[in-house]
Each structure stands twice: as C-alpha cells, then as structure tokens.
Length: 147
Image (cartoon, rainbow, N blue to C red; front, side, top):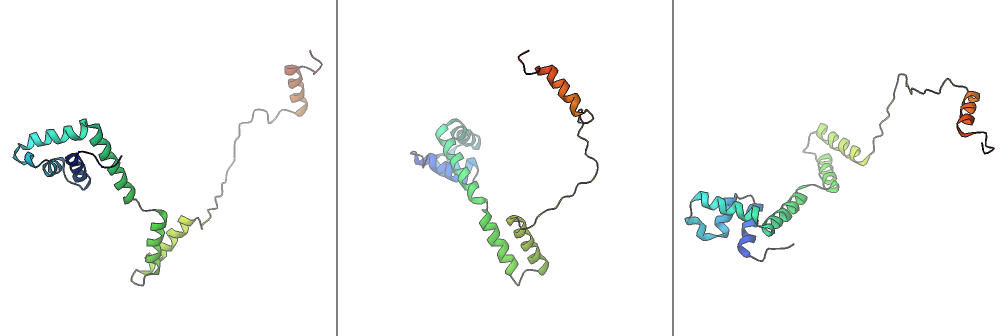
C-alpha cells in the first residue's frame, strides 16, 4: 500500500505504530486539536482509525510489518544460542541447555517410543475362515458366469 497521501493521516498512523495512544497520535498529526476537549479528540481519533478504510488498512499493514520484525527467525535463535553456548560468562549448565535446545531445533535427537499392551483391532472377520469368505463373496457377486 505505501504511505498515505494525506500526511496528517500518515503521521497519525505512524504515531499509533510507535506506541502512542490515539489521543497522543491525533494531537501530533492535527496540531489544532490540542485546544479541543479530550473527549472530542478521542472521538475524532477513533473515527479516523475505524471509519476510514485507508487509514485502517495502513495501520494494519504497518502493524503486520512490525510484528514480523519482532519474531526471531530460526537462524537468529540459533545464533543467539551459539553465543550462549560459547560464552565463558554464562554458567556451564546454561551453556549445556543452549546446546540441548540447538540439538532439538536441528532434530539431532531421535525419540524412541515403545508401546506396550494389547492392541484391540475389533476385526469382526478375524475368526472367519477363508473358505467361508469365498462363499460369501460368490453369493454377493455371483459365480462370474453372468448370473
């Protein structure tokens, strides 16, 4: 989408993204609003954000970008864990935990799962002989001679 064509709207959205309240962001974008009652500013700010589709879309776009930047990639996590594991200033037990986490991330550990007990398949045909099955099949589909 890119920046809004209305610079005041863009400044308002940028203020919200940086963590300012709607009132603060509105005051910065619309200087004359500083003379208004707080309730009036709040109403205008709310309407601008929620009723103006372009402003809302821009806000959501920037919010998504900032959320994406906040999430560490797998590579970043591995780099941080590597620094911990190699650092002499980190306790030995914490260094081992960092190595353990990296091994789990890489799939180095293989889990062996053993199941015990009886598996009940509830197979109704388990005790039926092959001859009996053939007889039932022939009755259902015929003898193959077109009957």
